[in-house]
Length: 161
Image (cartoon, rainbow, N blue to C red; front, side, top):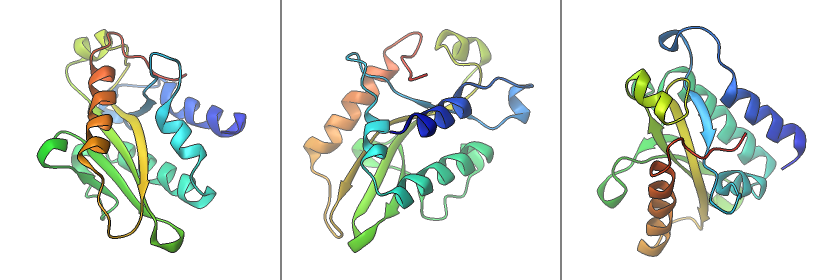
């Protein structure tokens, strides 16, 4: 990712203005134990238009905030083994499917503070792409869940800055 794009994302996720009920949710990016940031690496490898659209959807969801955001087919709560997760669904060139997997970080202020968050946040964990009319394998979904479990197991959360 270009330093400018990374700085723009970091600025959106770390600013801390007035009371939480008046603010959009923060957008944070999970940082793996090895220091990599899977979601940012995924976004770096997306076509520019898709990367920009992911950013626009994340901003819209954060501003709504998530519990009130209607989705419009782009922001969806997942079900079954992926229950508790949300995904942003986009279609790129040649109908290639792009997915960005997120967890919601909300709760009482004390719990958010324990997690190292100043306000509720959308934790962007990772992304994947697939061909049109195909599905992700159970192994793919398990990998996403493992990253999410690792993220949720850290106090404070390990996030990219």
